[in-house]
Length: 200
Image 1 (spheres, rainbow, N blue to C red):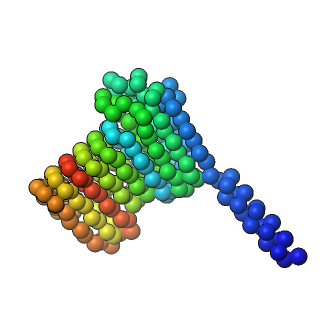
Image 2: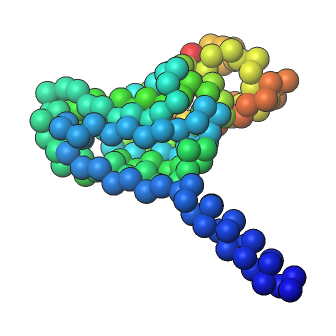
């Protein structure tokens, strides 16, 4: 009698877990703006195409993607895919124009972020939580907020400039990096292959 009960319980948990998972695939962002509910305090992974991206924390518990710039009309080719739950999800943006287009991604102000992008301009503003961002080439700017919020910080550039005034660091040239420990609860990792990294 116990085995059927355990199997039924496992099946119920599996169905409940599956119901919490979502998969969204949106194209033509100019005419079909992307929005999805997402809980404050959640973890979000982003895989972005090359271009100009601004990730901004907002008071709303949602993720939204919008475009602007001279090439916005070509955003009909852009694809936004999101998979996961309202607490942990992966967001991929691909296929859109890479020049003369600015993409703004709004997330809850308290969100743990993991971001990977090949090249371009990437900025993170007004987000509280873990931050892990890497850019192969271009400019990466991260608004870190209160430097005391972090327990571990590591930042590096292979070639270019590294400015981190909240942590008292300024470097330029080849293979520049720094590492700091603190009493906060968040982790910050930032890396640029070739270009400029600014923590402000």
